[in-house]
Image (cartoon, rainbow, N blue to C red; front, side, top):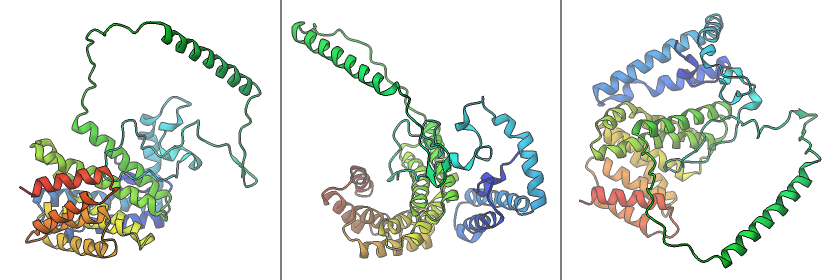
Length: 365
C-alpha cells in the first residue's frame, strides 16, 4: 500500500493547506518542461513520479477519501510496523506524540560524508526527553538522594585503581616485543549501505522542514543532504561502477530538489552568498550531466552573483569553477584558476581543499 504522505513529503497530521502547498511544489519540480533535452530514462522516471504525486493528492485533498485512506493505512500497514512496548523511538510519526519529535536542525553536512554512527532520526531518545511543561516552565526530574554519595565513592575508587596502575607501571619492566597478531579489518561498506545512510539523512531533513518550515537551517540541511546523496554517486562514476551509473541516472532530479531547498533557505536569509553558491553548483552539475546548457547558464549567473559579493569565500570559488566548466563552451582554464585560489586561501576547510584538488586533477589533464 502506497504511503501518500511520504510521496507528498508531508506529516500525517498536515492540514489541507500544507498538503496543497507540497503538491504544487512537487508538481512544479517534475514539470516536463524542466527536463527538456534530458535522457529518455530520466523523463520516464519523472513521469512516473508525477503520476504518484497526482494519485496521492487526489486522495489526501478530499477529506472523505483521506479519512478512509488513513483508516485503511492504519489497519493494513501500521500493524506491520509495530514494535515491543517501550521502544517508542521506532514507532511511526503518526503514532507518536508531537512533543517527542526532535525539532533541532541537523548539523550541516558541508558536502562531507556523515561520520560512522551518525543518527539521522529526528526523534528524541527516552533519556533526552524532558518532563511535561507545567505553567509555562519545564519541570525537571529530581535527582535521587543516593546519586551524589555514589558518585563520590566511584570517584574515590577510580583514584585508588589509577594510582595502583601507575605504581605498577613504574616498577614492572617493559614487556617484550609483541608477537604478530592478526589485524581484524572491518568490512568495507557496500555502495547500497552507504546510500542507505544518505537516504536516512534526506528523510530526516525532510521531516524537520515539515515541522519548522520557517527555519533556514532546516532547508540548508535538506539541501546539503540531497546534494551529498547525489554527488557521492557521481564520484563513483569515475571508477566504472555500472551500478552507480544506473543509480545516478535515477537521482539526477535531486540536483533540482537541492536547488529548491537552497532557494527556500535563501528566501529566509537573502544575504547568504554561500547558499547562492550551492544553488549554482547544483544547477551546473545538473546542466552538465543532462546536457542542458540553459540550466548551466542559470547556475553560472548565480555563481557570479555570489562571487561578486564574496570573492574570497572558498565554497563560492569552488562553485564558480564548477559552473565555468559546465557552460558551453567550457572555460576550463579560468575554472582551474578558481580552484587553485581555493588551495591558497589560509584556513580553508580540508574537505573543500580536497575537492578543489580533485577537480584540478580531473580537468587539468
